[in-house]
Length: 330
Ligand code: SF4
Ligand code: SF4
Image (cartoon, rainbow, N blue to C red; front, side, top):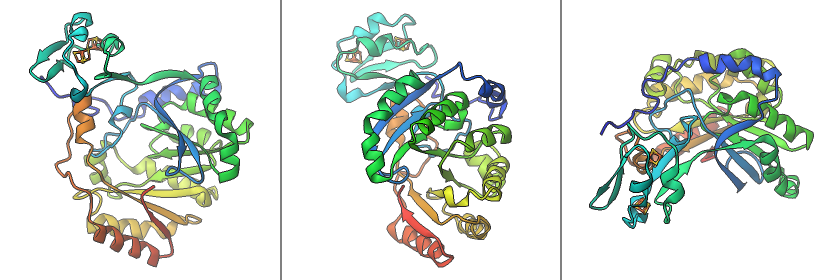
């Protein structure tokens, strides 16, 4: 069976995002596709936060640890250890995409239409549908449960993903509704979006958790599927607008890819130009191969171990030396 490549065949262009720019003015479409909402988060911005994970991402980073956030559509995850071989899913699948195996079942992803009938009938959650549509109103109902916690901790709501900018209409309306309730907002973003769209959204955002992965454009194209020119341009625009103080740079520390001396040196060269930025978070790689297998996706990384504490500490010290507050982890 073919293992779908992450974003395989997907054009990493702005075309789908461009189409939505005009829709930004029309907030009738107020539902979005998410794959999780986590309350009481402490790693994705200041204080205690609700983290909203939006589906869909235009990039295809080899190490992405949220592969269930790559596609806009609902995904199907299979947890073999939970399967009791009851075969209910086999009988209900309209596409005959599920077959028995000695250890459970196998899903043919080429013919699965992601209808979720199997996950709805599976008694043990061995098959789980990932992703659901939610309206802004429904989201606000969840977000409002922790108003007191946000106030007391200096927290708020973080929109993550996937790439939250890939659903700009839903994101903008959600940000506006948070603002109306005086809830602090953050987005966890690659910054990969058309300039006009980025500008329209950024005005509604209090804090940016902005990923910088690879400074060399060719490397970025190779490992993330697209050029970084627009990412750096959106970042510089934020700096020119005096938003540096609202930015936390996030650097995924990926062995053999982002941790090269040339990439770290290029980052150290770039950072002083980001006026107002004070904090950099080093995000150590962790192996996500199991998640990819459960989704039936190809995992391109051949490194499965986390970076050594020594190299993280050395990089932290180098960044501190040029005046930044550095955290290891989010
Ligand atoms: S999601 Fe639908 S088509 Fe896919 S395996 Fe399950 S029942 Fe079959
Ligand atoms: S319905 Fe669930 S438990 Fe039963 S065979 Fe299918 S995956 Fe396994």
